[in-house]
Image (tube, rainbow, N blue to C red; front, side):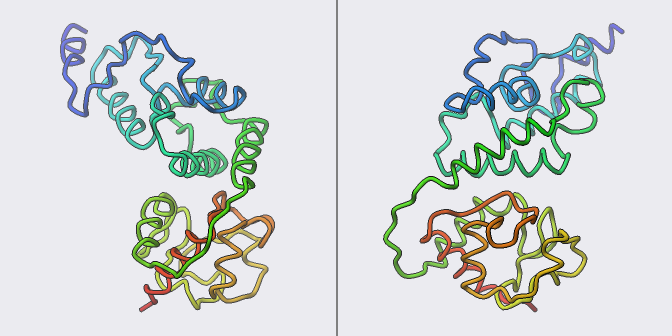
Length: 247
């Protein structure tokens, strides 16, 4: 036990500072509606904030190392303690990822749910998240649309889309290499939702614009939880995808 505690003082994956003061949890996810903030504090903040409620066994290596590894990684992807410092567009992307990953059961991870029995995201929790993202996506966007800018589209793609998509392989979403001009639902090896299996169209500029604008309105029942309400951003992303034809 002494050796385990001694080794626990080392931080091979980074120092998550799990046992420092946890005061200030009210700042977790600040600027978000209180129902959303409450869920995040209870079920996400242990890893995704600086206010970890660390258990006693977190003092002992190698358990402490594994916990710190997960916490450091989680904070790097989304730190709820720093929510107010994120630009509005990044907040919107993160909210969409929260909906997607909780809806798919990826978050909270299984190893966390096994120890924290009350951390499972319930249907009512999901509805709270979806209502928030829906309200954000419906906010009016007044933009004068200019010429397509594929370079800006690439930048937007890397910031907003790569959490689920790649140009080279399937992830949570299908590969987007060659998506422009491709028939819907045919990316090899990807398990499409029933909704997308039932429709027939080609991903041209009009279809991609409707999809990115509001996936649920275009194909009800699909699994995509993200939209791009800004018409100029949609045009730029589509232009970038058009420049990446399939092999």
